[in-house]
Image 1: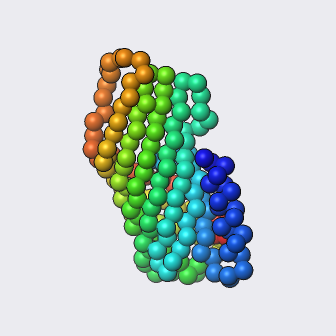
Image 2: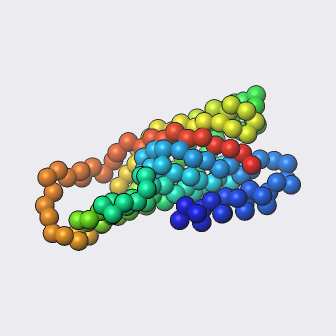
Length: 169
């Protein structure tokens, strides 16, 4: 899945080189629920539509975690010196997380809301930081090996946070 997203990012990026405006942004970061992720966003006026794919390290025989997220960022605030993009944003998205271990498979559907800021370090590079909440919309547990849980985490709302690097193509 990460290879497919990388091919998509490169093809979208190269197809928009002649336009002059930097509407496509590629990113990488770490966060909840995105985990270690790569992504792509497309800007239309003050709105960015994006998706990213993440995991928590390399899959092992004991555990495999995948995160897929689609989101919308609505930018506001005064544009910066380095970019005409408004640095502050509110973000809403839907995320799917699949966590498979030897004992079970857990699947989660999440609604994510965040407020964040993009800090440009040049006309193309920058850092973004977001903080908010993720709301559990649905969860499914499939037990492969019958077992009992010592601790259960049945919280419908959890913190959502992330930090990332981005590059405007």
